[in-house]
Length: 360
Image (cartoon, rainbow, N blue to C red; front, side, top):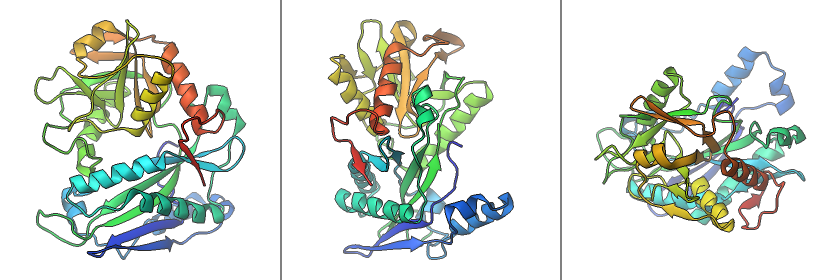
């Protein structure tokens, strides 16, 4: 399944009016979940297309024409003891605020946005649009487990000509998802394409930032790889990110290293969580420049992190036709144990000592 545009009926919408945010909860056309699942495929697709149609939002604007927008991604996880819980929604709301400010837009206070996300999800749950915990997910340590993906995004007012958005909307939708990366192929390759440049918008979860990663990742897939890894724009020597995920390397001396945050690195929430979990174990964590040479010569495990990626191991990394293997055929010990720990926290199978999960 991975990402599918199988939108839930309730959608959240708020537009900035110059002084405050005018909020609305929009109930799109729907049947019951059982009735929808029993529809012929063509009718089900037609219903989803109608559900993804909003006449009140302008087609021609600064978002559709120039990519002047930003978004977030967070998940609601079915809990082992029942119900759903969001993973660190306040962090997503805070990053959304920073992204909008970085794009010189009016921003919403994080508490207001996180409260709205809880409410719109509760409305969907009340209609039966939810996801139940499946005990079989435990058999592969939740690698193929499902969740509900929540996507808040900005959308500008009408306009043409390069300009700023002064009265944007924030819209939020929800859709079920499964594993982002296909199991069985965890090979990565560096790309000569540039994701972000110093002084740019690389630190913002900006719409336009994802065009080059989409191109680079698909070029990598065409060559038989799962993922592409971006290097820095100036020297092409330092690892920055994957196509939509942060990068970690466990070095042979036991240090866990991830590129330090700056204006070309997205401050990932899963990244932040992995750093905390590693420090809880007494692992030395270094946030610093990390060269491709150091990784190729001195890493024993590598993995990428993100809301969609979770913790995904890289079995190998290829750079300039040279390949370094990292426990190919077997997930690295640290990667595996941290993956299990994070997933068990998210799915309510392990104590949430940091208070990251917020129950719906």
